[in-house]
Image (cartoon, rainbow over all chains, first blue to last red; front, side, top):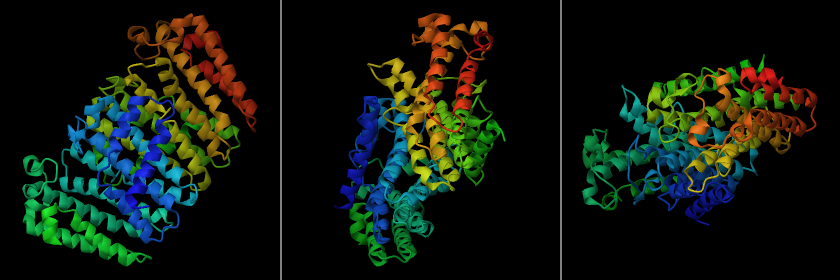
Length: 289
Length: 289
């Protein structure tokens, strides 16, 4: 079964397990709306790729870790889209959860997805109980204080905010969780895999910056020019398109070079470089390839 | 060390562990505001009492479970107080978190406390790793879908809501988590301890109903008459004060009778009856005692 099918199957199984037993139907619908239909699922695919490279001997644990990270990502999107943050109307071309279901259910859907994320790890770790502690800890560290996605979002509320730090923490945290959890799900020490996630998170951010500035050259399906309009730091504005693309290539090479010795090291290095190039808007990625 | 000291120490240790490493200071302050100064800590005290009655051989695991349940309770209060739910200005005589720190930090503080709750279990279960899975599962079940506190709160958003079910789920879920987690932290099967939590949750709700109606006879330090004003179900309005007090006594006796065989069974039965009477407003509890 390919990675996407495994991810979708695990996400569906988790949602069905909690949403078909007489719970409040609107909250169940709001949670489903937040998770399906799928986006790129880039974080859980990264998690599965690392687990496989580590010789993953427990595919269920890897599936659980990957789905847990995606559920946490979806929860953060639901809360970040709310009126008191980004006040976004659309997500993946559809109404955001608070637009479709109202603010109370958006708060609760985010909360319930955070909880479901932890449950998903427990449910899929039955064959490897000693891996549960490290996985819960990785998931929590990437989400809470002092440097998870909640902390990253909270820097927006600080009077002396460092927006660069804010972006690094928000994007890097879940990418690092993906690589660390992939390793931990395979029974391998997680810490050496952190750098790969942080580098790829930074590359993803640079690609997003490029798309925000140069989307006139490519159809990326969301509003552009938001960083310039909001005074947010943007690598493509700071370096120009060629500079930003070179920076992305450098980050991808550093990411590939950081991959620890493991059974699938060479294959994961090649995948890292090709996937990093695929992050660019289509017409730019053709140039870069 | 007495129960309250153990609880406060574990809560402080968890908050300090995440809030002193260069994270955003306002989010750290908002989380602290949500947890301290303490309320009655009734759920974590129940958790520790059950762990002790079960002959708890791992006090750290019990402390972690108790603090985790209190952190989840505090998280739910932060989100439930927000403008899109109860729009409450005061909690324990101080401004609610969103009044003191704004809505964005209230959303994030609730999220980060949910995450910290799971971390607290992991950190305190190091000596009993096989108890981690059951504890995370109990905590998640009592919080998420289909019958945790998020689900209970979400019934408020349903067009065909059953307010009685809503109250039972919200109050009962964390009381049941307290008794189940107390048992699980001691390495004992959790399910037989569920009924004690559910009965005590119901007793707590009845005592709250009595206070809401008869607080003119006692200083309980919060707004009264809210149920009648909002058309919410209230046992004391339905049964009268004598009927509601008899109902509470019956629930307390059923709770005590449900306690499974364990080393501290008799002591816990006596504690259950005396604590249930203490739930009443002071002048009423003197009558009942």
